[in-house]
Amino acid sequence: MVRILAVGWLAFLVILSASKSLGYGHWAWGSIEHFLGGNLQMHFVMAFILSALAHLASSRFWHRGWLLLLLMIGCALDESLQFVLPLRSFNPLDFFVTCAGLLLAALPFMVAQFRQQVA
Image (cartoon, rainbow, N blue to C red; front, side, top):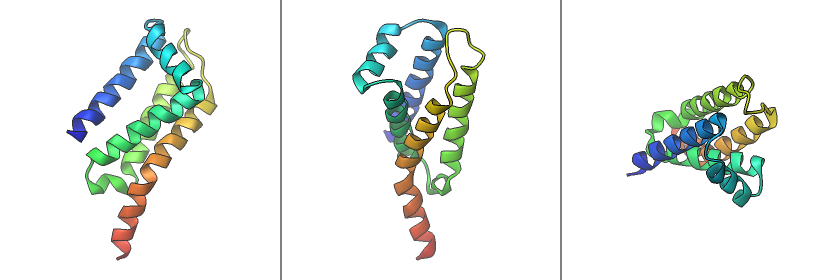
């Protein structure tokens, strides 16, 4: 069930980003951004939820940091695409806030994995 939620959340984020890039669905992403208090807050919350769900849905092997690295690479690709898209604007701060959300949600899983290795 958690895997379905994780994949669903990832699909939601991809569709949301694509619709913003194509100039569609302002009512959706604009409302979410407004509800969460702004662009940076939206990046943090969306990334935090994505990372938490992905870590809950994955095996312990991925909790060693591989999943976090994969999520960061995916977010970096999404943010870097905004550099070339005419309807989007690239902002490195968006990426750093996204990474903070990914890392903060991944931290308990990585600590638990480390504790199991030490014990």
